[in-house]
Image (cartoon, rainbow, N blue to C red; front, side, top):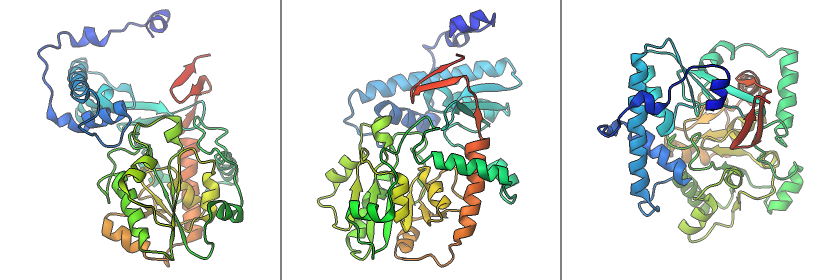
Length: 380
């Protein structure tokens, strides 16, 4: 990084030079949420357990990091910048600066890696984990896509079945017919099928976004227990394949098996490494259940009712059934059909949103070459 800046003859200062002595800095408890998020990422877990190794040591180190970046932001304010650019705007590294600088009405441009290969996403005054395109959505939600735009988004959506144009490949199996998927999973085609899609518990896109449940673990376990007394309904639990790709120290499958004495016969669990394509599952799904997974929009694109229990970027956009409480959630699970569900409207609206999110929001940058989810070479 230093060699790159020096090659361009750009002046720079290190954080150490800007902040100076840090021995007198003290931690402010207002950053406890940022501290917890940082710990979740460090340990790759969804819930902080007091028995985690070196927990107090790591907590202390993160508190120190937060006090340093808090001081950094205050020193940057003294420079009176017109605007600030930073990566993601979260965790101990950029969470405090993002909060302080935006609180002082200085525009912050946050950037991050897109889902598509060779792309980046940008937001003014919003953290990179939120994927928040709400302001632009209000401008375009009532406008029809042009034939050219429809062709573009349909082509990209087709590519997502294999993720051939994306950084991450989450579908390990080929798409199969509804009949073959039902046979493979041992489902009863005469009974309604609900599919619950989990998230990687520690990932910033899913952590600390609860609305109806206290955490994604409780949501999953309580849903399984609810189906135990509903033999005329079937539940598939699709554990997110990203557990295999970006890793986790708290696998959802292990949690389910440890916490529940037995799995009801009408509940089918697909572990993270299961070679089952998500689009195959959607073909057999009557109702989808999601926390924050992108599959929530993809269900809508297939015209399938989707109950969304947490805060995610596509919630409130008009094509998901947004849940605000446990009571509401379980009442809706009782239903076999959703009378007010407008299949055509949901497909049309979600496709407009998909065009905005996948094709407009993700800015092409062909000089970014991702080799893996944690390794990106650039400026080739």
